[in-house]
Image: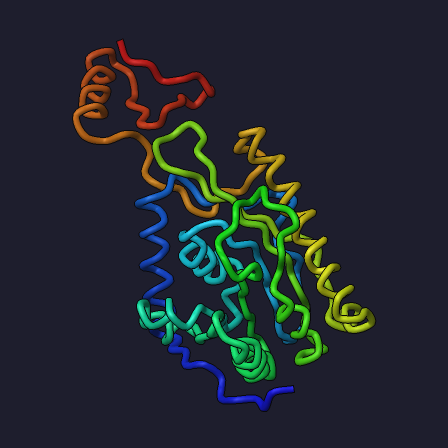
Length: 270
């Protein structure tokens, strides 16, 4: 096992600042961030470390996971591995607990395990991993998780593993919707009872089941199945919404910027 190193740099003040920035960024550019009602993260008692491992469908994942960490796990210090080449481009993430992993060399696995040991060795910490290690469509099967995530049970036998499904879709508004759902927790102790290949398969099966169930809800397009964590700016904007606002005022109606009215009917212009 690689020797542990000093945990990655993380500034709590800078984290709060950037979490607020990404909160506004998501609100501005997406229609909503939604959490499946059945997929609320299970309450994890104690100060043991968390390993939250997710699929990796889009560029948006970093912003969405930062918002999720800040809103759903405010009492924990969050860290995340990032491809070394990407961290060179987005060095600002270093002060938020990001650490570099070289995905193009054999030493990348050792880097990941060494840094993770330093993180998970202290209480009230969480490590967030896009465990596919690459962008992949939510429909791709098998998910192809990197084997390093299964090794974390050896580093942190007191840890709890939480699968996290992430998906994006366009519903009725101009902006896209982001969706999250957590699966049932897995204890590191239970995972350690399995050989490494079976351990990885168990983790992948749990994430696949969570992602499949989330996708079913996304396809139904019923917002009542979700808790809205963030609501973005609705409507099209510009001249189009200006005309709709004027038409609503002349008709004595309340202007509804969204594509649908409160009763679910489509908003139409005449």
